[in-house]
Image (cartoon, rainbow, N blue to C red; front, side, top):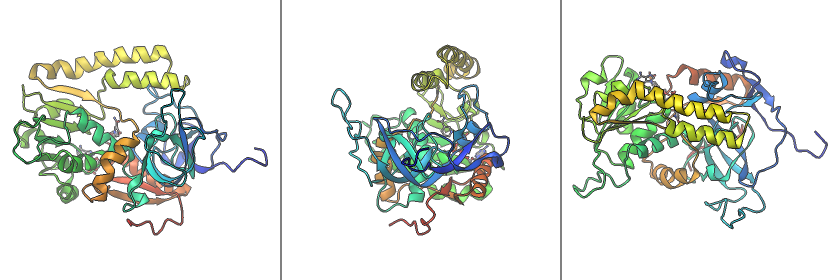
Length: 397
Ligand SMILES: NC(=O)c1ccc[n+]([C@@H]2O[C@H](COP(=O)([O-])OP(=O)(O)OC[C@H]3O[C@@H](n4cnc5c(N)ncnc54)[C@H](OP(=O)(O)O)[C@@H]3O)[C@@H](O)[C@H]2O)c1
């Protein structure tokens, strides 16, 4: 580092696959300070949020798909303010790389991409298109909590074929969407809690069933679930009738979920964990090849595609196709426009409320405690880390 270089950000990182959350390192990040790319923005992080993916990636559970290079930073979700943008935000063909017209100083939030994460840090570089403006009346804490959970829920519900106009309670039979009932597993989790609220307020579905454990039944009802199954006492495959139109599977059990989907009725299940399909993972692998040759080799990406498809056919689609039920797997992608256009109006009207499970300090101890919560998988909503210390009065204004 020369005298003219600004100090490196402080944050959390791993220098090898972790066996335990306490393996996380905390301090000045050991990465060279990168210049901003033409599509990127530098953001001072105020609040970061963790997801199960953070622990899965850094503990090596996904090492056959995502070959992490170390030292590796931590965190995808964030809120904060923009400190740097490229001078020229137009590409060679004159198109803007800044479709939301963001400026330095704007308060923003979002989910960082699969190859430029590291939001548990005082500063992060993200793609400009991953950013959304933070609405004035929502705290940085709640904004940071939307990122990956919110986008996964939205992209999964879109993949189920729901549209905003569906079942708008007007009795309009010309509605272009014939789905009115949905089953969402793990309704108190980071994804499920957003999915229930979107199903109720964005898609206006009439029947929303979910599974939670006993002490989360009231939370699920408050989010908007109309039927709540306590999975510690009941079996949803027996206690729900087989007439749901669609399901979001957050547990990775599409065959069990298929038992409550109405057969031969264009029923659809989308999973966010478990048996993937290459329609999502192959483009992801291709993208990783083009963005960073270090992550997945081209041959590996091709083999991955065929292997994934064969495995999915044998384990899932061979059994669901005869019932006329489609199964898809999605892998979330960052998208600032979806956050701004779908989530901002809903959170401003308090129709979608990001649930905060726990708030942790931006210290080694705080990050370890946050990672332990995520690893345990018993959270109600999101685990967040307050990066900017004097954000103690971060209230919805
Ligand atoms: N494909 C993608 O792009 C993508 C994106 C985001 C997340 N994911 C994956 O999707 C899964 C869910 O993510 P998340 O962020 O929602 O996780 P999360 O916030 O950690 O989920 C925790 C919740 O799951 C509930 N739960 C655990 N086992 C359950 C069961 N058998 N039935 C019902 N609820 C159960 C827990 O409730 P109790 O405490 O009551 O058990 C807790 O409320 C994770 O595996 C994650 O890795 C995938």
